[in-house]
Length: 439
Figure 1 (cartoon, helix red, strand yellow):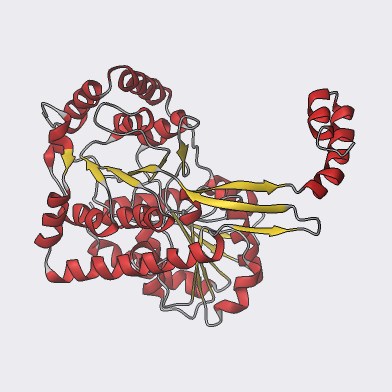
Figure 2: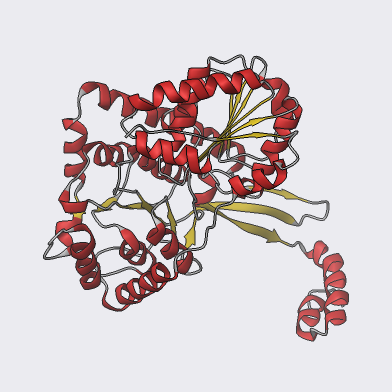
């Protein structure tokens, strides 16, 4: 059977554009009720029975018949052995990517992650103390594919932030361990690693068991069960975000080779059938050229069936009046990945307000950001870039306010506070402030 990838062809000048556009963007983040109930049962069981429940679910879902949790924990020597076993080219690529990711996040920490304070004119000290989390858990997907890049993007900023312990969980269905994932854990400085996945792994990290330590925050993407579990344990622990399907939006002026853009659209479509790839361009002939390249290149792709369904169900090639309109539509979408594939990308970048990551210029393929450019590839999806940010050092730190009021400062602040406290009917608040006033 011949596969066909038929992204919707839309035009902003069409009378039905708004309805067609909204229909193409629509994606429900609602979790299936059966999944929600199953996840709730797993979380409660792990919270109650700890390691025994984790072992039982790991045997049921991943086919690992481990007798105890020791069999599911990876030692540092095993992580190093996986690193040493890699071909030279893979080992060097992993180390080079890790260096770039670490360098970027170290710069990020210097820019926004330091403590500060100042004293005002009466000697009162005011400031902010930034401290790292004690222990975090990172979830690394391991079902349909292996993701060593996810290890780097979650563990390295935590390490740079100064987190004391980084606990990794990764499913290994049927016991198949991916050497590149384990090697990435070694390179990124993971403290402990367990071959556990699914809702039971999230529960173990959130509540702690006899073997798996309780963490303060859980980061990393996963399937619907993992996403549901993360939502349910939020409050007991922190989480990074609830990730939806992967997305790419390309703004093109027609100057980039059409096969480059077609492959960029494929790069997200190959993740899964729900991924979304959209091209915005004011040149109809260029949209035709990209469609021809999609048709030509699709049969060469190992994941052609996934790409074809993703593009046919959720993809779109949209003709706009001009690049300014393309930028305005981009802001409405607020995509996870945004490529500005034009001769002068810096002309359009100031018009772009909402995106997880912005890739400027024809040579900046989204895949470089996924693996080795340096900025984090854990990005807000499903329009949440309107109010959310990429994963970063700041996600592994917390801020405490510093206040040291001088005797002189208490005379001024005390009167202000007392007046407002009496106004709220909180006499103890007011009198606590007034006791510091000179009689």
